[in-house]
Image: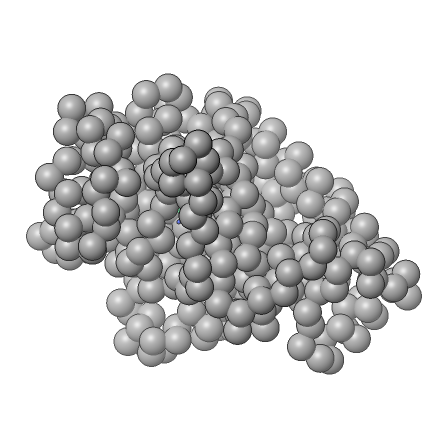
Length: 327
Ligand code: ASN
C-alpha cells in the first residue's frame, strides 16, 4: 500500500499509534519511513548546530533540580515523578533549562543537548495527536544573544532543514506536506499572544494552526520564572514557533539573570527556592550570564515534516498519554 493511502485510511478514525508488536505490514513500512526521516532530521540538525560552533552536551535524567513547568498556560502534567537515589530525592528531567543556563554561564558560550523530557500528560491528551508522555527536545542556549538572534538562528536552521528533506527525502513525505515545505523560508511572521487571545479567544492555540500556511512566531507569553519579563511594561521577551495544522514545535526566551528578579518571580509563583540554589547562587554572585535559547520538540518537528497523524507515530516505541506499552 502506498504511503499516502495508509495515511488517508488512518485519518478516518481517531488515530492512536499502536505498540510495535501489533503493527501490520503496511504500518511497519510506514514506521520504517518515520525512522529514516528521523535519522535525516537528526543528521541535519546536529551538523547544523556543530557547524555554528555549538558544543554538544549529553543529557541528565535524574536531578534534584529541573524545570518547574509552572506557571505555564500550556502545561497539563498529571503527576511529577520523584524518586530516591542514595536516599536523596530526585526528579526526572522535565526540560534541561536549569542545566543549560548553568552550563552556558560557566562552560560553553553556545551549547545544545538532545534530551528526553518525561512529562506525564493528562490522559485526555492522547487524542490531541500532539502530546507524548516522553519526548526528546533539542535544547540550545546562546550566551549574550538576544531573542532576535535565536529567532534568526531557528529560521535559518528550519529553512535549511525544509530544503534538505525536500531534496533528499521526498519519498518519505506526504505529497501535500512536501509542497508546503517548499514555502518554508524565514523570516517567519510574528504575532503577539495578547492579540491572538483577543482575536481567537482562550483556545487560540487550537485555532491558530488551522489559520496559518507557514510557521508563525508567537511572542509575549506569561510563564516560568526563567523567561525574561519586563516588570515595567509587563511584556515577556519569549517566543514559541507554531506550524500549520499541528501547533507549537519550539519554545524559548531571553533569560532572567538578575538575582532580585528571579527571587521575586519565584516567590510570586510559589516556586521552591531550595530546588534552585545553584542557579540562585550563580545569579547572586553575578555569574549567571545573559543568554537566550530555545528547545525544539524533535518528534513534533518530524510529525510536521512527515504529515503524521499523531506525534507518537514518529516514535518507534510510542509514548501515548494514558497508554503504557511493554516497550
Ligand atoms: N526548552 C524551553 C526553553 O528553552 C524550556 C522548556 O522546555 N520548558 O525555554
